[in-house]
Length: 172
Length: 129
Image 1 (cartoon, rainbow over the protein chains, first blue to last red):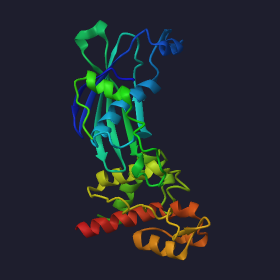
Image 2: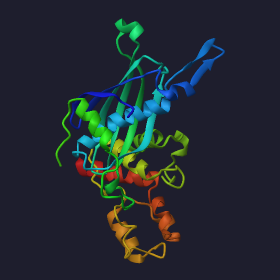
Image 3: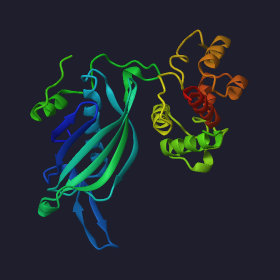
Image 4: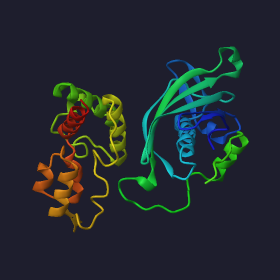
């Protein structure tokens, strides 16, 4: 999972989740940003693609929750993704996903990414970007394709995340 | 709302949804052939049109549902006469000129030109007035 805990879930409206970025995550060591012009040394960081994935999981849970996780909610389009700063080890990311539109076929969500640098805790969470996404509920897609009956999207790891966040898994 | 104003709003929606330049969004441009729209973009366009104009678009109202999968409407990769009539009945706002000249099912997307979207929005707004 690319989020650690769901802090708030307002059904069909908003979900807030956090991700603690750790130096123990191996992928950080494969992504060193350096900028000679700005005289910035290389350092491990969390790549943007994984920040997008964190938002996709946050928004995907929000969309899936609206149908009691009966629909297969698949990320279909990254409509916009802007990030001003790279998350580095030790920071906490906060994802706030909001549903903009929701139908049987899919959903559009807007997302805000904030970062808490614990060395500057007094500044609190600072907005570092926004990520807007589109999801398809694939059993209702217009192409008429067939998918497996079992819900391959919301696996056990999603259920564990919700349980540890104190949120009940909706009964079918 | 004047047709020119509707066109401008549709243009803004398409620039945003398809990441194309404003000057590419001409009245005769087709969403799939000229502007590169893929299937999920159609849902995105529906959502954005609803927000831009404040009306609700029902599933299948703007873009067809389950027409191209129906063997009565499509045979051997071509849209049948029955299929063409059904598409025209469901999508009176569409531009069928390209599809009628070559009824390959792969060209169904070309029904949806920018002008067709403007027609659709104009009719919706007139009905709501």
